[in-house]
Structure formats: structure tokens, C-alpha cells
Image (cartoon, rainbow, N blue to C red; front, side, top):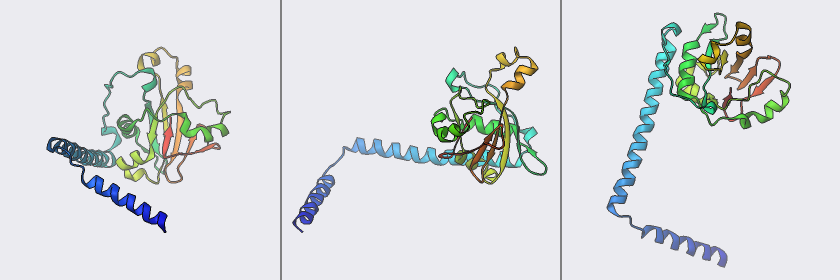
Length: 208
């Protein structure tokens, strides 16, 4: 009982000490301003994603024009070029430009091979897996922009090579550079080129 009482006394003293701390008015105004701007930017981002999602869902893929002029990228920050993408259904809806737009917007350079180590160890014989580039996309970010993909299965063909380098490759060499990825959003599973070797999506992150 004495230990409990002592703990309560310390807690009460700490609480009273915190109540007696006063910040200068300028500091309080500065912190309040930061909080307001963070709050505003958070909701502006949500609104932008909602508007972009509405456009992507209801606009035909052929009318979507993604930004072809990208900022200069370093070797470890290269984003993939989407060659083809489709939702796997009876009609196989083409969404190439839509996926490229999403990738350009939410590409995360911080996603690396560590997120998929457990899965890739089981697929170590898959020579088509390219671990020379860092980055990927988060499933939650995709669904927040394109909600109808939450239970869909999409197929993506992509490559990382720069356009100048692509122009120097023969058709056969270019074909070998193209990677394939199937993302099952419903079951949170991905396949790389070989359909019989599934990888579990860890922490919602898809490594390209």
C-alpha cells in the first residue's frame, strides 16, 4: 500500500509540475500555426486524392495523360515505366495510363527488399526478380486513390530502363528487360512472372 501511495504522490507532483509550465505567447502562437497548417494540408491532400480518384475511376484510360516530364532522378530513385496494365476480368479493362499516374504520384523510394525478404527467400530461384532498384507502392495508398481496386486483381508489365537506353536495345533485349507483376488486392498476394510462386504482401508494400 505504501508503494502505491508513493507512486500516486509522484504522479500528482508530476501532473502539477506540468500544469505550472507556461509557454511564451509567441511560442504558443507558432506551435498553433504549425498545427493548423498540418491539419489543413492533411485534408487538402485527402481532397486531391479524392478528386484524382474520381477522375481515374470514371475517365477512359485513353483520355488519361500522365506527366511525361519527370524530375531528374538518381540511380536509386528511378520509377518504373508502365508498359501495360489491366484489371483481370472477363473484359480485361485496360488501365495502363491510370496505373502510371498512380505510380508517379505515390511511388515510395523508401520501400526496399527488406519488406519482402521472407517471401523472396522462398523464390530465390526466380531469376526474373529485379532487386537492383529500390522503391515500390503501398496498397493502402493505391486504394485511397482508386477504391474500386480494393478487391481487384491487376496485371502490370513494366521496366526501369531510361528512354535513351531503351532506344539502344534490340527488340529481343528489350523484351528481356520487361518485368511482369500480378497484384491480388483482395488476398494481398503478388506474383512475379511465375503464377505458381505467390508472395505475401508484407506491411501493405509492393516491391517492384
